[in-house]
Image (cartoon, rainbow, N blue to C red; front, side):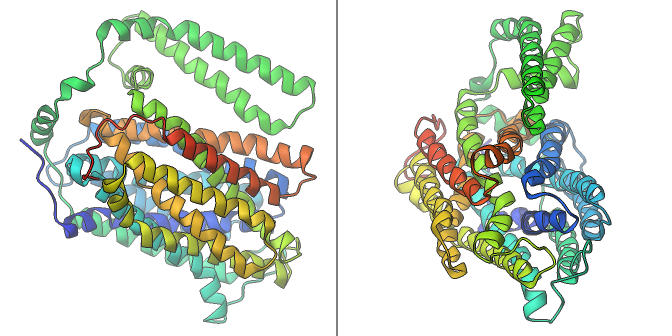
Length: 505
């Protein structure tokens, strides 16, 4: 039994929730550095404070994916319960975030807020793989990109609009968040919940029996893992994990003894913790416990498809660049273009508002070009399309280093927007055809590792690099990000797109 093609409006309905999800992310991306700095965060420590968000995604997404693969309700389906409850929690956290009285409460709220976002967002990626045939998946992810762009545009413009169009103050006393930011978060909370609720009510899901029939038609045998190879990998989990633990501890010792940036403990500690998980999985399976969710997740991680491994490197450098941009555009623009680091000054807040506008522009560009990408991919290839978009993003982000006029930033954002549209669609369209349908949610969650890990690396080293080599000049972080985009684009050419057929995106 083949999956039927869905109409444009069916794909619209199943993707509409991303409008609200991205409004939440857009408010987070455009305003969290501003909130942190208002609560007396040092600019060189912003990256490590931001780490709260990515780490929650690293933990939450694979777990949500694993359990959503195994969830079924005749009334609510497989993915939609996670859409709904994630949206409810996200709306609550968005209301609380701009009312944080201290820096550490704001950081804690970022953990909660990002966890809620991820509970809703992760199943949306798997939803496309569940519902659409191969020939429509690029369109499905492009539709998500469109709503992500629209949602982010609205979110990015909200503080600017409240201040300039409705006269709401964009300044406040020291330690307090401006009313324009607070109102923006309240609107975002309402939009997040209502948009996701629309998808929950307007979409349906295939039953387990139907999914099984579709899997058989998609030649599921191609995804089976050789059992002898799996046994060998399980046996290697203990030695591999032990090596990772020792290596992480050695690096931690090096950081401690050389008085290097304490932010580097994020990387060294992460290596040791990952090694500990491998060792634990190996010991559990050596004792005959083979069917637990934990050991299954570790085993599936080791046996991920080749295409997924290749895309991991593309994702690493893409999201390293994005994280650098999200963290450092506000301090860089306010300091080097608006010439202010005083968070209570009009100049700083005008600059911060303009950064929100710039982020809105790149998201608007992403929304406008989203439906052009499947056309270009059908004429060339998904790999070429993604490479071209990332190179344009590299040029756009790096050009900020040379800009002195606020208006010129809008031109830079065009390249960034094209790259953003492709990042949100092409890697997922390539990935979906290379993974088994019964593990779609889990592998989509694991794929998030290659979004989170580069953010952890960026959080660990960007502040250190700026402090040690660039005299805490935040504008250099954007130049580093541009170079990272370029590397990601070149690596795209090495990816094996196993599901691609020319003329069919």
